[in-house]
Image (cartoon, rainbow, N blue to C red; front, side):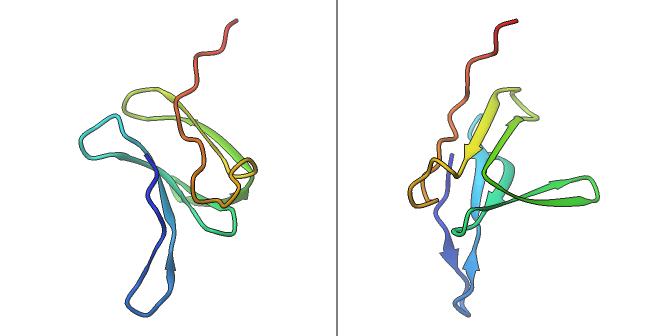
Length: 87
């Protein structure tokens, strides 16, 4: 599930949410910005990357891919689950 970027009352851009829609309340996997920066938090570390990120949803286990290199406007990246890799 992907949410569009909004703005605050002061006009500042708010990042897009990268979510897994496996639950009634979607699981937040990270956020990304219109310039292509992906923001991830893991324990006490914050990661800011550009390009492609792969992860597994901590709730349902589905592999999720966020690839902003392929999204023409960074507003509609593919976030569909990928099939399991064969051994």
